[in-house]
Image (cartoon, rainbow, N blue to C red; front, side, top):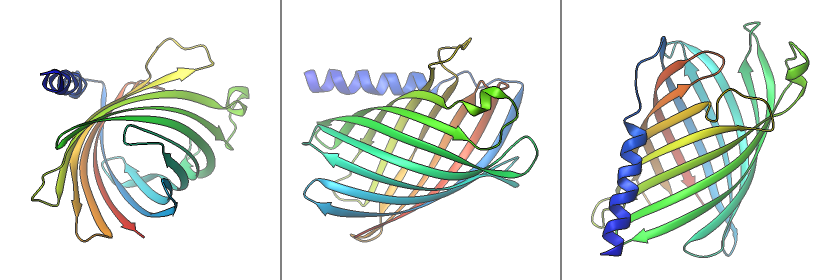
Length: 226
């Protein structure tokens, strides 16, 4: 009974995040192309190297491209932690691409409920720009991110569907908003073989800064596991 109540509560929270108000002054569509390589270092310690190209302006222009490295450690079936660093090139206000640096640390808790898995993740991230327009650009931008995710593992199928919702909260600066970005999405992870996995997903993203913008995002990914 408790497992059923937890499942219903988690799914209800996800549905609340997925049913965000979808009206805004500006809308866009983008495609994110992702690829990663994942391998075990020692017991419960894992490394991941990933890259991504993210388009915007109705998928007609490249907004960001990056390479990221991550180290994660799984303490047990319920708790894991990770740290990562990303170097990217982003289009800036001068319509040229400039380097940004970003680092992350996160803690993830997982609750297995049979074939259904509910997880919660908290990320602290900090971003540094190299394109400087004013004094504020010299300071790092920090966020706390809160995500809840539900994923189902079909025992007889290689397809794992998922739903998630995520909030971005600005830290260490004056802000008119407690939340400046929201994401809600879903998709499928498909095991082609034991080493090859593809992902197809959809994200609805609402960004409040610098202007209110909604973006519908198609995600396409591939992972190779050593």
